[in-house]
Amino acid sequence: MEAKKLAELKKCATEIRMGIIEGVHAAGAGHPGGSLSIADIMSYLYFSEMKVDPQNPKDPNRDRLVLSKGHAAPALYATLALKGYFPVEDLKTLRQANSHLQGHPDMKKTPGVDMTSGSLGQGISAACGMALCGKLDKKDYRVYAIVGDGESEEGQVWEAIMFAAHNKLDNLCIVIDYNGLQIDGPIHEIVSPAPYEEKITAFGCHAITMDAHDLNAIEAAFNEAKTVKGKPTVIVAKSVKGKGVSYMENQVKWHGSAPNDELYEQAMAELKAQL
Image 1 (spheres, rainbow, N blue to C red):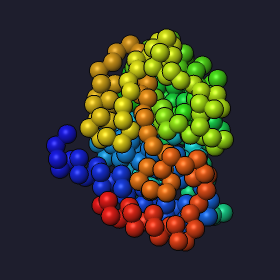
Image 2 (image 1 turned 135 degrees about the vertical axis):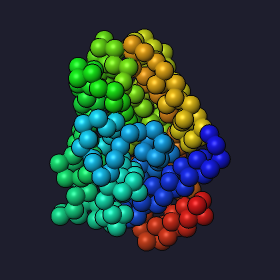
Image 3 (image 1 turned 30 degrees about the horizontal axis):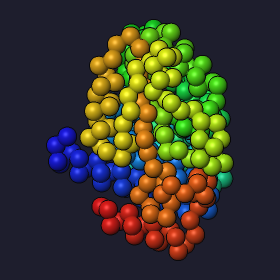
Image 4 (image 1 turned 90 degrees about the vertical axis):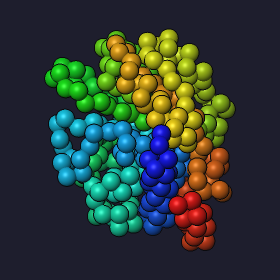
């Protein structure tokens, strides 16, 4: 990746992280940890990979993204705002009663949201339906789904992956955010879904493992996915929960907690220093 593009995407990722902290702090609630872990992926998808137009959010030929781990909505909202779907100032209304930015994505209220999600395990099935529809309609759009590693303990996730492989949905790219932590603790202490790569391959999909915070690795993974024919691709994105905010990194308590005023200032100062 050329230096200029890399710098731009890094800046976008940092601004997405700032938007996450802004929203969660203003709401006094939310899920910063798993939102911060996908910021680099969101930056790449929306500012390099996906064919989308904020001026035409329902374009039938657009690429689609389903945030199956819907509790990471702050990351999606921050990305959509930065892309121009709605004002960045709206992020401060997160979770307020009359806001279009609820705790989980709502496709009927928020421009740019392709699928309502939040009930874990279900979003990936919706993504499969979108990809199959694209095949039946002979469209060339691609569908992306972001799944949590804790979420991947759900049986429906694996049923959907089998469905995708059976239907040869090579226009579908699933990303598993493998940060190793879920609300109850480390995933290996709850119900470990590892090893991912062997299972993904056994289920009939193409498996790729990447560093979720290395934009060059992210670009290589998505480029590889586009060359795969006759089967879907599942990318195992090894990430750090809370990435970018020192006191949140690898700390399970920040799965679903909002920073107080002092910690908000610290987080924003750290992120501004990364710009």
